[in-house]
Amino acid sequence: MAYRFLHTADVHLDSPLNTLALRNPELSDLIGLATRRAFVRIIDLCLDERVDALVLAGDLYDGDQTSMKTARFLAEQLHRLHVAGIRTFIIRGNHDALSRITSELVMPESVKVFGATSETVVVEQGAGHFPIAMHGLSFAKPHAPQSLLRNFALPLSDAANIGIMHTSLGGSEKHDLYAPCSVADLQQSGFQYWALGHIHKRSVIADSSSAIVMPGMPQGRDINEDGPKSVSLVTIEDDRTVTIEERHTSVAQFERVLVDVSKANDWNDLVADVSRQLETLRSTVNSNHLVARIQLHGANPLAWRIRRDLDLMRTEMETRGAMIGDVWIDKIHTACTEPGMERGGGALAELSSIIDGDVLTSAAYKQELTAIADELRGQLPAELRDIFGADEASFRSLLGDYAREGSAEVVARLRGGQGE
Image (cartoon, rainbow, N blue to C red):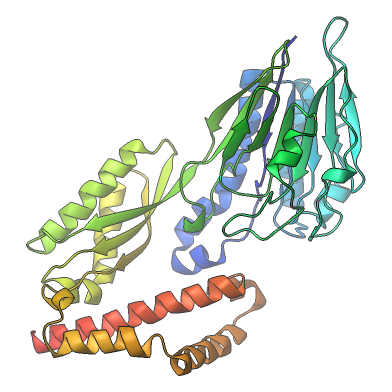
């Protein structure tokens, strides 16, 4: 008899959305509830597909959350699975390693939360059918610099072995190393399926003997988690072959929209060009809502006005988004230039070249910019300081973006004022 389960990770229930809240409270409310709504979709999918189990591979919560509203919500949803005879297997990742909810919440007896010591749960499927061995291990602390693979028990020879682990594998962009291990080591472990978590981008590595799956996250929370989000519906057949189906779950999908406005003759053309691209993108997105970050580029005589009136452009796009249907605007950026600027003509073109080549790259300028940002960040409440980036790399990158945008704004306004 085939064994079917749903595999997901990095749900980050009720995680705070500080930057969105500052820009657009209504959008923040939508995305703030999206993780819950996506989780309900996961439970609905388990029930609709009549799976045998739900596997949650870490970071169910975001940090040391203590909200009993979150606890009650989770208990209610897992109880739905319990009533249907569907088991739940949970491990803790780096974000929820210390969560009091996981440790204090009374779970239905059908829920297994693996501890910091590796355990194996054998699920018998009845006479004549192969058993399932669920191997799980949770993070004991928020950081796990060493591989956890050696702590797992050996696979059971007569069972289909499923390993549940939170790991960065060999590392990934935007993700620090956590419980690192290699794909080759997992392939040689003898497990039929590795249910992984931690990296928010989906990946599937499968061959005839094993499958190593990072399902991504079921719901993005900001533009850095853009693109469609999903879970994995897994079937282990009687011959131990593994079938993996991707099922989309996100309520709101973040997308970056790059719009070339070089052919727009006036403001109305400009608005129409952006609107058409938004409408085209919306038709390809299956989620209930599209949250777009728009980047305008190209040489256009309106470049200075575009920079000056980005707030008006945002209002235009918000109106068009409502007309298209459930399209939200995260931000609008511009990299538009005046015709001729790229050829180096005129005093302002020379000024722009000096700023880009000498000022923005100088150590003194970077030091001064960092000092200003540090002072401003220090005046913010602790819960808002991630606006400047959650780590040193993102902080430096963000400052660089602000510096380039600011210098382009100055040059554009000078050009608009002089009529060049």
